[in-house]
Image (cartoon, rainbow, N blue to C red):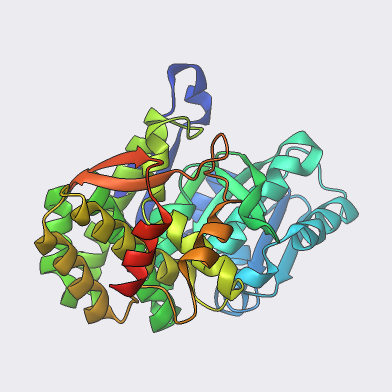
Length: 365
């Protein structure tokens, strides 16, 4: 039986109300036929998943859709290394080959990679089709499924090709976390604690206190963490949909993290693992500048270590390699890398005044 626990609304600007949408958080939502029949309304469906998630949930979701028009399943290989234009082409080829129309609905069933690629394919298909996010990883549930950022990686950097295309809704079924491997689940907690660091010091403290319950996947604790994370993300997106200002704060830890992913090759570290290391680096730099207490950095490091998340870059990653990788990041403006640091816990700041010596100090720490 479906159990709706929380609903968070992404309320976009007044001129974009028709693109505002709910994030539904609960249990059994993926197989709730009454909901899906209402949402789909007999339209054609392009269901995109991967070879890890699909065997668990694709058939159940297909059954819950009820009667639809044309139905197409696209099952892709799992992994960040497949997040490129060639894979998006496979989605589009399947939708066009089955003669879907602009009214067809794309459904992303999987983690952040599937969500990003499905949303991008929907944005491109006949100049724009609707899509629904059904995130099955913790990281996707609290971050990538919300906000309309879609796209793929390029050899020059992460997420350099894409579009802003908001979903019609996000369906967070917490039951899907039951089949999520431990490493992927823990990686998602990096994005959760990010929200406390950049927007909500009380949430940061709560997460530190409940680290053991989170690691144990205590349902009530996880549901609270997902809800608060989505509330923070929704508020930031509503304030700055296209990342012209405050939304850049969500990239705390990501400038370093994306560089680590690129240096190693996409897929060696999970995205959340790279972000976890990047956040410690950014926090250490913030502390060195007197912006946050060393005790806050110590709490973050203890949180990461208690979960098995990294607290710095892997061996062989030098300051020179990081700077080279960051130079082509999409956050570069006027040729300068923009870093997100903290001016105090819960309050980020964008700066360009980070030197090679600063980064060398982080690696040697």
